[in-house]
Length: 180
Image 1 (cartoon, rainbow, N blue to C red):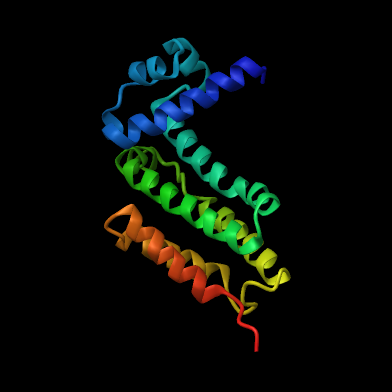
Image 2: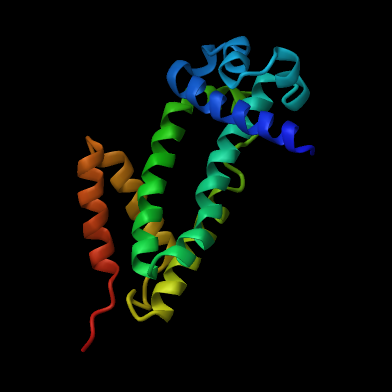
């Protein structure tokens, strides 16, 4: 894909997430194209149907989250990278909740936008945990699936973002390796 076409696609996906999170499936494709700074024809060249755009927007958010692991581990100590990723997970879950009505439209069309989600999320958490274990800062007996359940619980239970942060701090503290 040409660089300008890739930029247009990324802008469309960002605009779609904002629109579907705010307005659900009622978000207009014209408004999404306008917000992205492109014409409706450009939107349809990239995403031939509303469902294709919704699915791509969701999958793009998932990819951003999961693909950030290497960047975080290169820039921060393993336990801090895990905590930063957890913040991103909470934001991802908020976006997913915001898009839930739009995602139901995709599911009704016979597509499962969540098909790869669990595997991608598990792989991301596994990489973060392994780095933490290798650095001696995360317990070796922690299962990625358990961490994901804990993160999901924090995402659903926290009534405000500050509270989610405090709960994530508690979760990370429970994951830390204790000498002795």
